[in-house]
Image: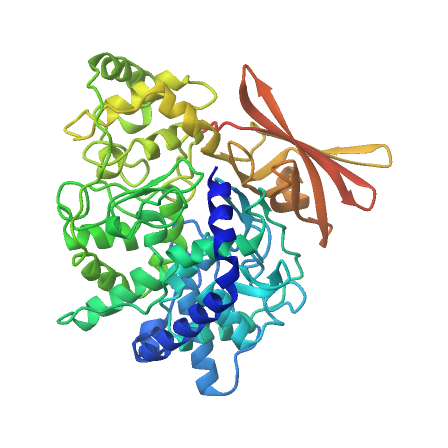
Length: 579
């Protein structure tokens, strides 16, 4: 229905389409020139230095470094600032896949209309951006128009999962700085994975109607009286960090509802809810101290307000924690100016039965780690008591964590196990209702079995690979090698449109390791990646099959040719053992 709606509106707009597109692009360029003095490229060099590696204890990517820095000091400074902008824009997690080179694309993003895969941003002329002119790159980032055409006469409009609606606020000079940095990186020859959007939304021309209705580009609008710090924070939040993309709810056409700016939104096609971050004291950040907000965004949270998890943890680990402290403090200063808004949710009937059942289940399943009174374990397992992320807003995040588990708060510590395969929808709902109302938490017991059932296909499962959860063998010429030393991690959502894996298979003590990494494709039925065997890297395409028991997906089988006559057979049990 959504696709028919978009396509229907598009058909009405086709006659005027060519003129409208030209106007949109022209206006965007004009806006950029007006705001040119307010971008990051005007900031001092010291304010655009980023940490190349994650903080100690944090997960995250190493930021790719230029192959060679330009000899011209001005151009070298532009590359440096481009690196800052790329990190502040949180490009790494979306355009990278575990086990493959950073920024080589291939990450799946689910939508109600199908799956979009992120593109290769390296300097490869054939597969990346190396062959794009400045004008083409600016149009792609700022205007959401890729090189090429759709239905011959229409531009190749990007789907708004690429946050060009926020990047349209970037200045021209900042977009060119990003290009200078990306052009300085080593080319990675990995082909872009094709999108799998459903008809008629697979026709990019149909996005014209969406753009006419919802895309109205303009530079960041600064209010009179704002300090320089608030202005910096506004540029970071509104343009670079594109916080609006997740923290603002969307309408039926997947466009942000501007009247509900930063008041919280369900992340598309995922079991995650981005909470209200307006200055509301009850529903947003208004009751948090400036230091508490800063600690959450920069230092991975604490045992008082809780810790970032899911997609937000990636934002902290790969972006915010890498920036100069002053930039994150500027973000906090800007968020204090955001109009307080209440979180809008339907009222629910109170149910003491669900809460009572949830307490019993919590004591049996959860208290061993989160403790009887929800206090957690210092610097290892976050608290549930008084944790606003647990009780505020919808129960989506809490349910998503219980269904799929997630990575440790700090590296090499305890992971959250997945309970989706061991607890029923009703049991998970009962635990959520108890946790959201216990120990002084001010949430509502609004989780139901139907809520859980609707989120189960969207939950992202995160599994540590080890000899207890993974079996792997490599055969060639009638001989089979079985691996007994396995490490790595796999991420897979319920419908497998987004699955990623980074694995290291070897015999005991790391002898003759086989490295494998990549991501799902073809609606989760194939795994595309790269294998490293005896030091040689080979592109691989593996088949993926679900292992189902009692109606639940409990494992994945990956099998296929790794090159040189070698056949891999791997089974992953979708459960963790470390709780």
